Figure (tube, helix red, strand yellow):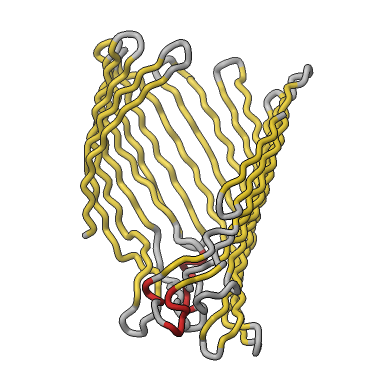
Length: 378
């Protein structure tokens, strides 16, 4: 069992209670809960509001922050169960989204809970099977004192609820091949967003949707010769909203000496737009929706040289390049002055990383690294 507590300036307090045990029947249990509360800085100055009408740019007692969280882990033989809950409430002192400056009437709440059950078993050391099921629920609420005019209390909310599963098989049918086959499914049961003015009542946004996506992936690790490995992977995803997407992966690994390795790596990935980016519209106050968004895509290239030095040190030198297409960014539409998400950016990044790591049997670890990167937005 562990009990800890902290106290600091700005009336800040934090505590944690944890309990863990490994029982004689093989079951392992971990339970942990945390809480935090801070009044924040009593006086904050923002030059953008430096005017007598807005308290000369000084926000007073508007920076509070508090959270609480709970986590459990239960393991028994091949089964592992995770569950968690977190809650955060944050006062907003910056008068974002046209809210009244120097007011405690603007705050946001985030709440998340989940449960995750995983089964993993190695059958005769030839086939490894992993199966996983999960359920998540997220809730957001924002209370905004808007200077519309007249001044009105605006309520903003979003609820997400989803469940899913994954099934993965790893096998070595012959000496030179190691295969991984996997399936994933996610069902977004609830994707709700709402916004309304409290008094006088006016509904601004009341949007509800649902979606699902599924994926299948296959990877083969091929031992071409004793010191040369080729890793080939392909993933196929389908979304009922965005359609199909295919992501390849390639790795060539060569170890001419026992302590020397060269790697050439390539990969591609993507991200679907989320419901907020697609559908959020606050009635023309600050933001509008864009239902024509498409997925972001990235291609990565990397060359790596690793060298072990003696018994304790490992060094590496790598060159990398990332190309991001259709990056989703929020910008202001000059036609109406409203914020909107668009696939407007193309990013190219390249660089080099040097790393040295030392590890000793007594647990001592030392690591030093240097990275140089150039990034360009086209």
